[in-house]
Amino acid sequence: MQRFITKRVLSSTNSLRSHRCFSQLAQKQTSFSVHDNDIPIPKLPPFDYSPPPYTGPSADQILAKRKQYLSPSLFHFFSKPLNVVDGKMQYLFDENGRRYLDGFGGIATVCCGHCHPDVVDAIVKQVNRIQHSTVLYLNHAIADFAEALASKMPGNLKVVFFTNSGTEANELALMIARLYTGCQDIISLRNAYHGNAAGTMGATAQSLWKFNVIQSGVHHALNPDPYRGVFGSDGEMYAKDVQDIIDFGTSGHVAGFISEAIQGVGGIIELAPDYLPAAYKSIKKAGGLCIADEVQAGFGRTGSHFWGFEAQGVVPDIVTMAKGIGNGIPLGAVVTTPEIAEVLTRRCYFNTFGGNPLCTAAGLAVLRVIEKENLQENALVVGSHLKKRLAELKDKYEIIGDVRGKGLMLGVELVTDRQQKTPAKAETLHVMEQMKELGVLIGKGGFYGNVFRITPPLCFTKEDADFLVDAMDHTMSKM
Image 1 (tube, rainbow, N blue to C red):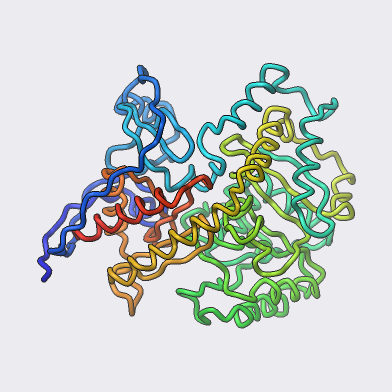
Image 2: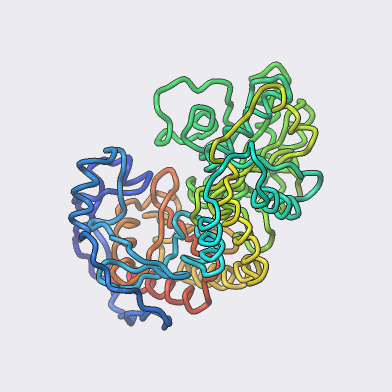
């Protein structure tokens, strides 16, 4: 038997931020059901590390400075923002030394684990030797990492350009495609996120992330979303829209097509099967280049493959990457073929910090840790276990509309009505808050802000996965 209570849930003073992005929370009324069955309060798995005492400013003091000196565009999770002062592998610690399981990984960025000793050692050794010079001089760090990165790529993808972020990498990829083809038209997907600079904002296709500035030359195709899309899981049907855009929205020739294999900010949406081969075929026929945005799905996160696009059996012309490439160090890259790379010799292309010794030394260490510790395999094994357990929760709670994703890039979509797929926005915020109180941190995303984004460090264990699901189960049992 269920009884219903009115619960005060925190939501943002800015509804767009709270429900479609991250959240700065104020108060809102909503109703939740409470189950009579009592799920035990889960306990964190044991972990052999205690951080040193923290003596810095409090969360309230930091928040006051942030409001006074930092951009008002910044926002934060939770009604009481978390002051993270220490991290070790898959765990974070607050100012009081309390431990939290990190199920978000700094937005799919920490892949090896917080402060992994091998990565820290590589950074310290490099910074003690030389932190920055310029690519106008020689240094082995950039060359060693480029060689190692190229060895992980399929086909003739052998030339690497280093940047500082995913936005920069995608900006460069779009420019290369336009230069190489002599065309301006780019096709991306609805619901995509590719960055927040001029070109990448155009390729991004969620109004929340798009300012009212000129964003020309980009067409947005139907999103091959198996859960909410009009054609379900029929990837080839969605791909027909790419051909329609070429036929009816361009001269018949395009510069390129850019897509994520799994949309991260968009709510962990895995593209429908067979979509990319059909879409790539249309793009190639129109003379365009195919760009794979691997900023979130790359570096073994999906488990089954090192790169997300490989699951669809395609080889892009350009691959962009960031986030997991540096385990938290600001680093991005564009990888393409020698022939395509030649276009940047037409003028001077230069990036002051791209490929600096410190960042590339860190990147090489990350790559070696992924291989040495079999983190891709761990993402597959632990991710499969986690997804199975989340799917069992879906069978138990009507509020869970969908469980999706691969490896350790998983999404859980909450809805108030499974038939109508009505986004459960307030409930999503409530569950996140309560899970934080239990010691679990997860993210959220999707256009409606109703999808949990679960992208932990790849060193996550089955015990961690069980604790995360048990915390979600306990929270939902009280609703």
